[in-house]
Image (tube, rainbow, N blue to C red):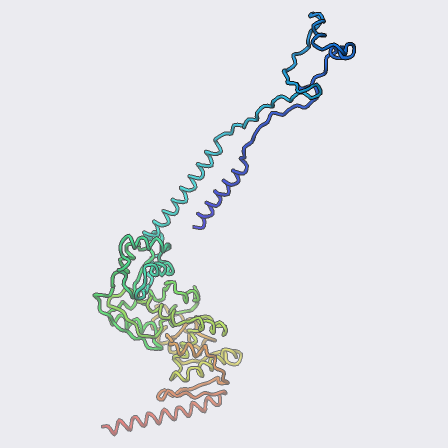
Length: 467
């Protein structure tokens, strides 16, 4: 609409300039003031001068009568003038009344034609714009998740649709809704809309309970689950196909703000969106479109990543992908939530002291490379496998090795200060021992091996006594 406003302003400015230059032009006939040309100025005749000198007591009329008629030959015919007295000058004759110069009507016709033509173009553009918006022409076909609050008005719904990029004119949508008598029919809850839908279809969708006749299925994804494991759960419960979910989840493009922070062409990354399936409880329904399943999960992750978390992330000079990858390692390494900040500190210390500790040496990264990537890779890529295995590659792996919970993410953002560079966990008790030097680490490893052996022996004894 901005271009339309500029066009209108240009037309108005042109009209203003034309009006100022087309003021009434009045042409006056110039009056030649050259002495002798003015008919009110004429010299006295010689006869008059002679009469004034020789016979001052004779009147002018008597003198004229005494002169022979043939001797009086006037050289010109003086205009009739009115005398007021002998000393007063003759009155100046009336000047010609000035007349206006006749103007051409062509400029006015051109201006009017241009104005009408410009207004017609603007109206056409507006009508076409509203029509395309109303019919969904030329807009995206990606599905958008829209949640209508209880008691929301048509105006609130219209502006929600605009914010989501589904419609362009909330006012026009409100008018259409009122004409359709749908203002009181909108249903609160979750809806899935595509921008290329016509207003009629959007309103029908928003006034229909999509899952009214479908069974709701509750799914809980635990912390540390991989994308493949989540896809298997969805297919097992009849929600959507495994491969369809993997494809749509990795494709993304649902226009959530966090997506703008992700690399567009990540190198050596196996599953592009591994790590962004936020572990939580979700409600789906049978035979749900994969796009809608993905959007519910994307929306949840987007809500969990608050401005405060982004601020801490940037202060630590981490990208979102690095944060989630880092947190996925902490999620897999930690035996319990309380130890997560300390475990994260070990990897922070190694990342900040790359000369002495270039590799993170995390067992879960090695497991992911061999048990997930290698098993699901159609063509073996050893470079990618080595990059994920932190015993082979340096620094953080190219992507996450699982989907971490918020506790692991916050543990990384806490940046807990320690002097530890090593840790070793008991697989049975989930207790972890930390060390500053490699010698201390070896001692901790021996202690934990002894504890695990004692635990296994106790379990075996209990099993024997039970028999």
